[in-house]
Image (tube, rainbow over all chains, first blue to last red; front, side, top):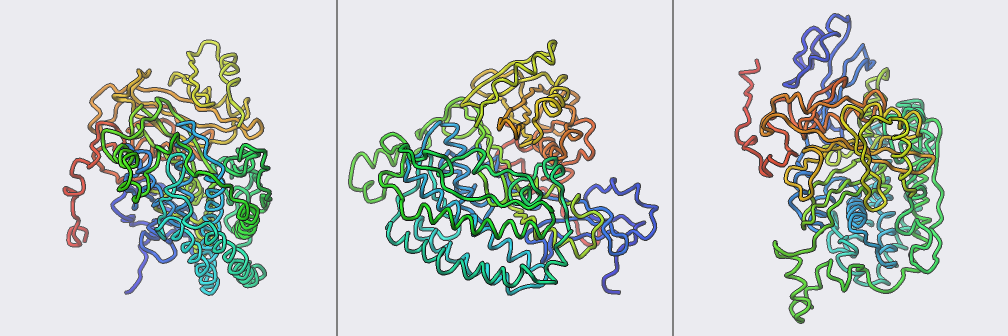
Length: 429
Length: 180
């Protein structure tokens, strides 16, 4: 007897406490299906206990925490620069955005304003991260529904973003590129960086996005699987704390880049009256999985628009805002060659040195690819944070998953999950 | 970003008897309230002051913090008013009545849940319970969320060591024979 589902009277789902299913025991024709934590369509380790009425999901109970690795506890023992290496492992689909979000929050706590050059580079990388994330999400959403070609179309182009990150930071996947008030290093070669980015946004990306759109936008199977599935109304989206593309697909007109401008999204970002970058915020009103797909595709195009405005006019000067450059490690060559750099290196590396935080609390957030990515920081006047609290967008998006799924067919599970772009490493931290 | 500085005064107007205090740091206003008034004030802010969006619910353990705090655990709600573009942090403090290195239910560490106001609070409150051992009454599903059911500690408390207390080494291994 291969593959026998337990009938509803036997609730031996797992070691978890399942008392919440007790009142359903007498319902006829109910089956419990344990989906995950290991399942190809759950992307990473997500587990959902589904109560099925035939093919229909009558209740879904997500169990998360399989990837919990104590990131917040670890943050209390790492200093303000060190912790960026942990942060970038949260949403590993667009790690550079995590780096920037973390240091945006830290700079809110320290009250540091970055240099124009740093802001410009960070904004470009932030948008590259957004493209990187959306390409995977859109492709993977199609992959889960059987369209493996679109996945390859999107995934292929992400490699070129990795190349750019590899070039600027020396690390391909987890760049760990930002530092308090600046960047780890300046661009190794500005011309090469510009050429790489322009090649990507002008030559590679338009074709990939065009291919994706040709393949999916009017694809009957794709539309039938997504339209009207996993609908969240505007009120529900606000109530459940959704943000980012999910909220905008439900008609919530929110984008932190417009509402709380930071970096180059703010007017006068270079201190000499430079206008904010121009872009549109795509909104859909249907709130279903198809609307989320369309919003993401449009955001890729808007990101390209933002990069085009910045790439030719990266301001000169330093990338490091901290007084006399004491916030970031000096270049290795200087460490061996000059006494000042040697002192600075040791000041930052030694355990009893470094720089101290103010005693106070701050919340800083940016518009990440999946929504509002924020950090609530408590500083205790020491070189490590007293408390790091992450506001992971995935956590809020996934908490509404059961609500979106109820009443749908079992096969819609993968359609809804694909449209949420859940990253379990960020969800569980 | 607009400062939310005018909202504490409005709350004071609506709750003349409540004991309130206001902290301000880097343009961010923190309204510190008593646990008993918490739910009413949150409801007032949501229904009458336009704070329709719950950004986050989280907690902080102030055990050993350099400046004195009203209580050991601070639990905070970050609220957002879309129209006024203002963020307000509502914070309350609770003090444990028994040693905090175990997982016994502490009657002093209980707050009223805000799940009836925002569905977004449901999982975040579960996480606060999981990580700090602060329970929420009237919560629809007060279980641990990130660690497992029998986890013998609340990891983000300051008296919980970074490397744990050997949970990984002592974790009960369940064999197939035992299950069947």
